[in-house]
Length: 455
Ligand code: PHE
Image (cartoon, rainbow, N blue to C red; front, top):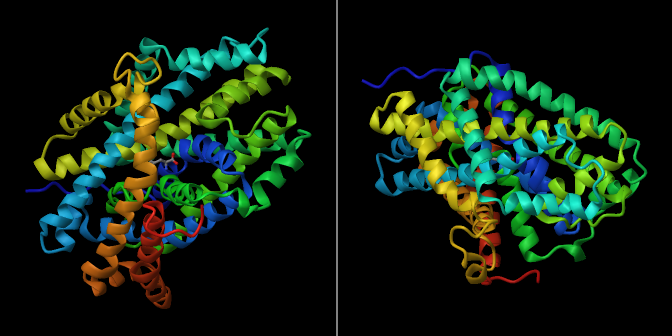
């Protein structure tokens, strides 16, 4: 007998937890540095367009699937397609992407933990810019320290999700998300006062399409999916905890706006600092770990600003990783009827094992030749593969499932539950059936080199 599903206690709890999943290192760490590498404005514009035109419809679709079936990805796909084995494997693909994402995400989260502690011990005091930069390399190349912080971070996740939905995820999201907004807005108001602010606005908001490569287009799409947490089945799991009377499209819209806002505000916090001190915006993955501490070191109240900033990253990361872990755990519980604790133990061990090569990727202790062979280190390879390829492919299959394979009436009925206007549902269905798969398909063809509309 399957146990009755736990649900979110309140709508606010659902919004906090789901926007917590969406707002994470994707918005605060990945978005600024990838926007920086892709020339700013044009990338940002495309990212916003993709988020609302493709990401949001898929997000709504995932919530619908979850609430309708009251199941997580694997069994949900199976139920919607008359137990089709092929569609069930899409669920397994989702599971694998979530596991890989969780594994490398905890490495970056481990760096955030480490930097929060380093800030408290005033690691940048009396050091030159070059020395501050070197500390990041030192951290990345230390096998023991990476394993230590990533493992501690994974354990914190366990601490949150053993409590279940209401007492674990919802409870902590309701504490962490307001803190996150408070810290982010304080830093934003602070960065308004920096002389680099107008230059940063120009960089972020004036599109120059000559700066955008075809890879940049795919990255903007991948970024839109990544920041919204869609196409991995995570939102299906969170949707399955929704109350029947909740309005899916409105909630999804609110969460999408919140997430996009955080990405833009994060860029408006980071680039003014970068421009004020004439540093290059193409800092790569180290942008916030190498560049910002240099800036913080020059500002009054370094210890305070720096610690607060890395705490912000840590909170954002945690509310995202708990959703990844919850997705894995929920699928295992449904498939094998494991107890929650047992499922958590299995998932966290797997995440740790899969994450080990990423934790050690900067030190060369494991797969030392990886970078020479694949031209990216292990960590960068999995991060690139999952966000730029696996997520768009999985999103394409998902739009196909919702738009073509599942029963239209069932889907539309679920959309309209708790909603007073049915015209919106037809419009949404049109997008998910025709537009989203088409755009995804074209972009994937272009990336495969079969179509060429941009160098
Ligand atoms: N959305 C999260 C972020 O922006 C990452 C994430 C992706 C979380 C997929 C869950 C699922 O950081």
